[in-house]
Image 1 (cartoon, rainbow, N blue to C red):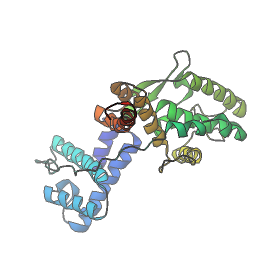
Image 2: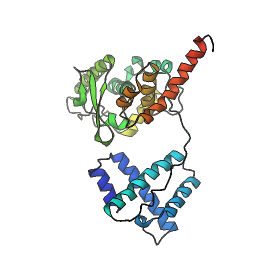
Image 3: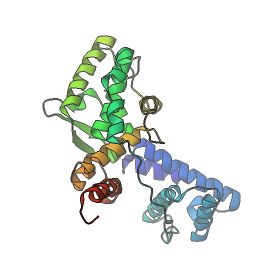
Image 4: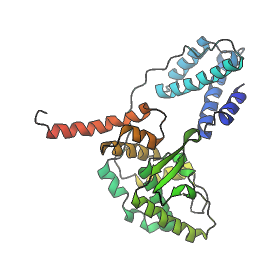
Amino acid sequence: MTEVFLRYLQYEKRYSPHTLTSYKNDLEQLSTFMAEQYPDTPVEEANHAILRDWIISLSDKGLNENSINRKLVTVRSFFKFLLKRGEIRKNPAARLTNLKAKKRLPHFVRESDLKPLLEENQFEEEGFAGLRDRLVMEMLYGTGMRLSELINLDEKSIDFSGGQVKVLGKRNKERIIPLPHSLIELIKFYLSSKNETFKGNAACYLIVTNKGEKSYPMMINRIVKKYLRASSVDKKSPHILRHTYATHLLEKGADLNAVKDLLGHQSLAATQVYTHNSLGKLKKVFDQAHPKS
């Protein structure tokens, strides 16, 4: 039934390939656990006690609370699907509760650190590749889009006259993100260089490899890590630039709901985590300026 469930997620719920892989891995881990500990019980017949034992085993292996809670989402969804199809009479995952996770504030690059990293001379010596790398950094920071969204972004998604870009996010939901004027000019210059370099034979995707082919996650990660090496952040990844985009917007007074829409978040709670960083800066300003501080 797991394959039927995954097809349901793919074709009816239209989950992304990344999410499907996560769900598949979670169910395979549960299946492996049950094959070892409860060899006579199929996954579809797992009860509440078995699922609870699995959660305990994950915790014993050192898996953090957030990762376990994500796996619980998979399990709840799977057994809810079985119940809906009439394959089971009672949902064994219904009474499973999330583990209390420690709140982790998202890391971000300080504005004072980021400006030198995005200076044009950092990228000039490498020709087309350097221009492409600069665009990668500017797009991630200038739009807050996800890694997968940038990789799958094609040239036609850029609306130069409107100064915006159409992004296909999670669950195939589209959103519009405004582009700064400087970024629009950079994209135009990049596309001209791309066309000249590959004589019009490159892939239609905005970001391409040195051979004109579609980019891939490891490549983008490598670019970001290279140019963030001088920053003070411990984790140097494309997602850090997304965090930075959101944090800087809120620090400049952007509306929380607007930032939620720009990031493509489903709920406001996912966006509110960035307010902690912004409030920290506001408190510092208050301490320095308020006569009663």
